[in-house]
Length: 533
Image (cartoon, rainbow, N blue to C red; front, side, top):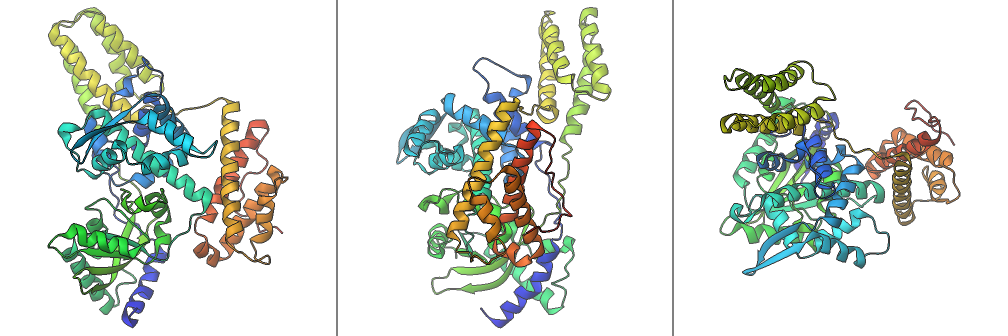
């Protein structure tokens, strides 16, 4: 690496360490509450056949906007485990079908059959995350069609609404499963992460020139957040789905193969630990297909070019570093306000309709009053009943059309605002947490046994407690707390094992939940607790 390039990276270290907040981006142009929409979608579709819900109809335009939002990692982080449970119920029983073409022939994949086949091919009691990864690595219409829909290159005329919806849900599920696998299993992070693409070279060159200009004027290390976009090439990378690999040759071949007569690009990310969650999601399969996994960089990642070099084949190699902000606050979409105003306008118009009889007015007025006041938890149930009663009044065609129009707006409103979190009874919650705790322990102990950490290392004694099957929950909690405290005290551990702290937090959370089910939580995390030996 050239000396000037090394100096450039050193100057960027200060910028990276500040974790500057990037300019916030809207979650989606259509929906304010993507998380709730996703949860409700999964919840509704997982219900027994014939059971319906007001929120089951989510506009396809909203689905497509969510897919394009680039916030998949953030969404997956916030969803709870009930989301994956709902997804498994859907796949295991609903016989969802994806249709695609391969070599001029139509192929159809029944997701339930694929699920059952992958379950049989894996060890008994394999986690749903691993079953889902196995499904994704199979050559199928599901693999082809989902990537086409997420990538935006599907044929709309040959894509059903259900395929769009389930492509979204399954893509998010893969991200959620990837995060769980990453936290549980401590996957190795490569020193360099590669990506081949065919577009964006001129934009990258302009950004790189600006980096050099800032370096020359000694302003690079202290660049203001509002000016970060001048040197950030993340938008160039996001023009296509992001496929990454730890194999430079694969990415180089991809760059040359997709560029045609253009000059391809190989992006070389020098600090993959900054995007460890993305890397582990992007490569969940662990097979040769990992270089093809379609995903997107989170919107809170800036990519700064530090070196450009063209090889003898005309491929430009771009070395870059990532800045990951943990301070991004998402802006609320204005769409919800538009929906609310539309509903109020439609209610007023219906109430002013001269053909609305008194019985109908008596039904609609309480709903309007509730909607104009601060909506409460009973608004969804009250709305469903009111609409049912209104339709039973035998409205004429014109009035029925107005009711239909109002119903669609109310569906859009509740798709955003209604709280339909899935809750389980105490035995089910206990069972889930115990399974989760065992997954974390198994993954961490497997990693520790393969990491060749010396016995005199600060972490060794605590990991021996985690690997001891006779350790009590209290002892496991104490060991996890000590490991977490050791990481906070020694920043080199954070660099060496960036996923370890989150894994300990997850383990402590599971133990806390298990303890709460039987008695008051005696092991609540104390951030000021000192390291205990």
